[in-house]
Length: 286
Ligand SMILES: [Zn+2]
Image 1: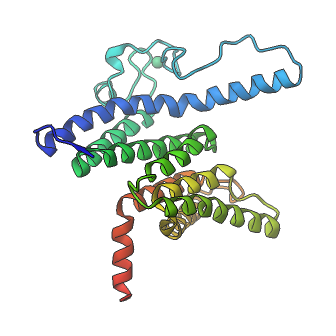
Image 2: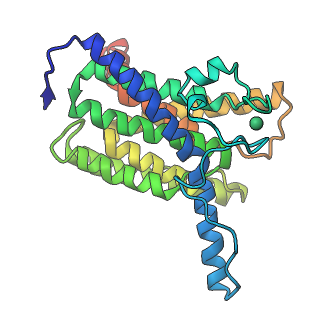
Image 3: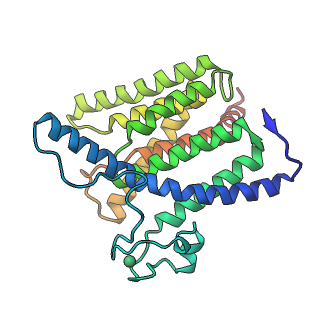
């Protein structure tokens, strides 16, 4: 299904870029607030379960309270909250206290904008563009949260599995067969690595969130892409891990978040996987 508006693909992509920048602001809020909200929920549930008095503080949600500077707690004015441009205009510093603003804000906004422009330029206003963007934005949010919190929330990974299966009900990306097997094989492959590693070394090398994320990637693009995703993500993870130990003196016992590597490898496989696979097969004359 594709909608024709009679304007050029480039103009549509430019509109997509602006839309993506705006949506990126919202993704920033999700990245920063969803973990706070979840931890608050867990704390309240635990206190309730243990029969303790409820906390007096107001729970944080995605909408409440309004955005404030984390340093001086000054409310952020609407004109200083324009995606990307406010950051550039304010030269990356808070208007009232000049504390540096995290580069995460403009970076997530820019990536969100470029993703929207890319999908709309490639696929127009189609279901492929819509699904591709939802998929990419979910990966972006998971990457941000995992980098901050070493956590891949079920609230995002599980719906991403269902949505991948749903998108492939009528074969948007792969057949439903490949998608279902992809989801199961994605979960089980990392689950087995986790338990093998744990039985041999006694340590936990990954979290259950990683299994669910790979299940989601399998649901979206079929089991055929799983070997490539695992290969790319573990190679990149190992490189970054070794570089961190050698160059930055990072403690080798300190865990690194695996989610961002899975998400990036998954995105590459989603967009260029077929090209990579066929190039690889041609190379070896299959
Ligand atoms: Zn400030």
